[in-house]
Length: 431
Image (cartoon, rainbow, N blue to C red; front, side, top):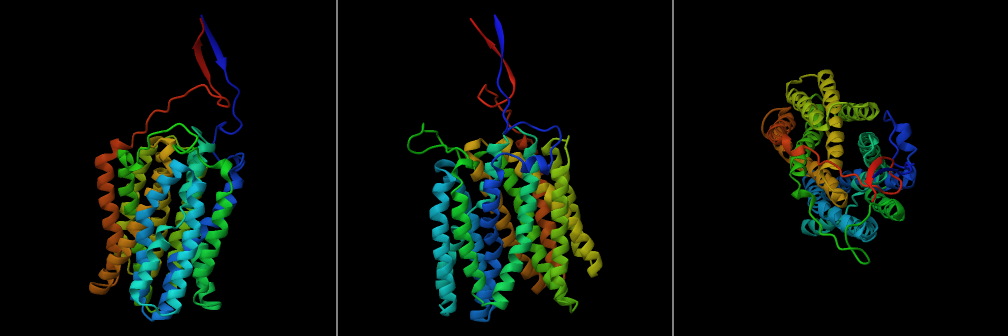
């Protein structure tokens, strides 16, 4: 005899027929982590520029300032995945609280050393823990969305929303850091970054009820933890995100060099703003579209468009053409980022997703740091605009890897079980 058992539909995971930001933001409990999460991730966009402006003021050298900022960025990229792994295993709160305390103390120590004209090795010694302890709020927010929206088409909308939030952060953060360092005091930017990290991080950590379940720890069944990097698809995504990082880094240096070469250094802000605007606009659009194509296909096509647009940057010889190409490149970045983050939901078990997101975030940061260095050398040693070869090379190489290994991005098939609050029918044999 066979009976049909129907569970009561969940209010949290009911999927609308068409995804949209309105439905997403009405998800129960979302605002309790979105607002403190936005405050806590703002310092991430302030850190590098605040260090550059402070160290440049105290040493008179952009080279020393850039080196200190590069040490911070590299440390963040290398340590972020381990922070994510610990968050998956022991809970976000357990990692955030000591992390924000270490970061705050390290950033203040770096500030004091810079103001006291300490030697370069001392600045580097403080820069390492400052970068290594940067709270990975963005990946943690994405992991919380995964808990609230399991198997919902709104996950793509959430990924788009987070991409737009990241872009908004990187518009507001540098402006705030510049204003503080130039109108208040050279150290004001880094001090504010430390204060925002402390307050925002602790408020975010306090929202314990919305964090993903942990995969190990006291009082729970022991679960063997497998690193997200052991998932082949994650390694492919890491390479693609390194290419995206090369675009960010190459654009920052090359746009500044182009503006200087035409005698209009102030134009750099407008050109980079156009690039960022394209990213934001396409991110908003991606979240409002009900996609029918598989995410693997969308990633390949979107990344091909990004590589093609980035390959044309070095040919621009006027500010108007460069602005148009920058807008196009920006519009191609958001779909690739959003689709990559969306694929993580299907590739990685829930207990390793925070780590997976931090690998991708770290890959962007590492690609950006490498691109800044290489693009700067090309601009100094070759011709004006040679730095634009870096985004071209980075995206083309990443696209070749993606095409060769795209089969690794096939998501695992989720196994459905009858649990309270999940709306579906399951045929259950009854004796």
